[in-house]
Length: 280
Image (cartoon, rainbow, N blue to C red):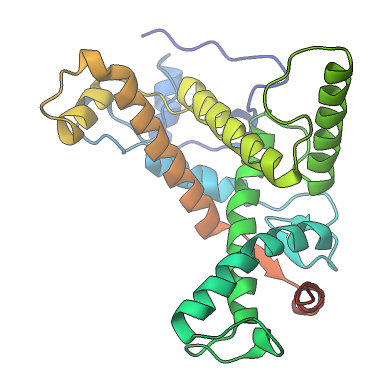
């Protein structure tokens, strides 16, 4: 196999080439003109997910401090990215229905006066929604920051997301006015667009990582196929096996990034948002 030529366009994920410090075995591989596949030995192809050692290293590097000043008054800071109050509130509102149902099922408590501070199995609805909101934001934000480092987006902020949504809806409205055919709603809500936006970027991130950094080999795919689908012919299911392999690697990477994420919560700011969100 010939070494892959390095990309020089602005979308190349340079964070993995410029800042990462590969292990000595990786350096020797590069010096010998071999593909840069961190922590992997092709002769041990039976270990289908061995490359995840390298993903853990990326997760550590991903959490390194940024030189950009951070708004310390923000309700939540994830890997030196300040989550705005507006963004925090938007995620929190998505968790309300779950909390209502969960508290009703576990403790038979209906929404009403003092609902958010009622005791339920040793906790309160307020604490439940706070934890779920923070967990959701952290998992989504580390992925968005990964998308940015991979060159898939330029800005991971909530304001940039809303601006893109505004431009998309304006474009779709113009198309309708011109009599052009569009698919789906004329205007997307923030929630509708967010789901599509995240899913599309996740697919693109997996493709870039698989093509440029994961170094997936045929031997590794065959090993996974023998383990997961021993009775299926490999050649007929090669693309399915590869997709499964890359998906596992991506999910592992995200889990590692979440576990190693530097998260700081501004309790006062979060409490103000939670109190304002309790109305209605």
